[in-house]
Length: 145
Image 1 (cartoon, rainbow, N blue to C red):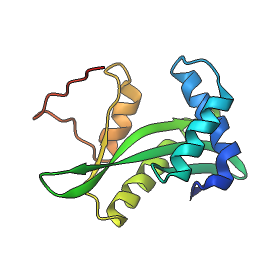
Image 2 (image 1 turned 135 degrees about the vertical axis):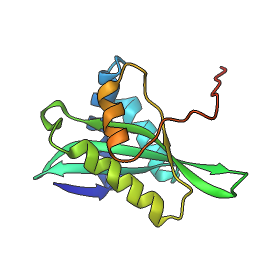
Image 3 (image 1 turned 45 degrees about the vertical axis):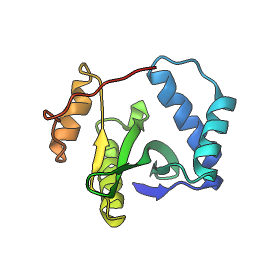
Image 4 (image 1 turned 120 degrees about the horizontal axis):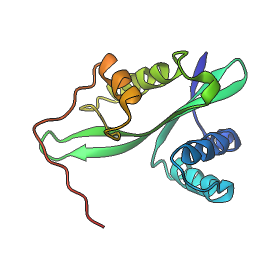
């Protein structure tokens, strides 16, 4: 297993993984829009993406978005996307990607890494808890469109 930080040169590989990720969440396949979205994030330095390879095959990715805490006056990272192809699940790729994201956050001096997942996604919750994430109980989160 190899994990690398994605660059614009990885756009084709990343686009395929990103489209599969969106399909997993029951979105329509849209390679052109996925490529444009990822190109914008990477070109504008709006996200950090790590890609995991099994030999030479891209098997998964994790995407982090920067955020900031005014109270602590420190950066935080929002772990927004984590995906591993079906044939790579249960083999440690997801955990390795998560640990790489955490190591990156520590390297950048961030306050921490924040993520969210659906209540029904028990498999992901077990992974998050296994590597030290704790469910937030002190705050309410609200959403408005």
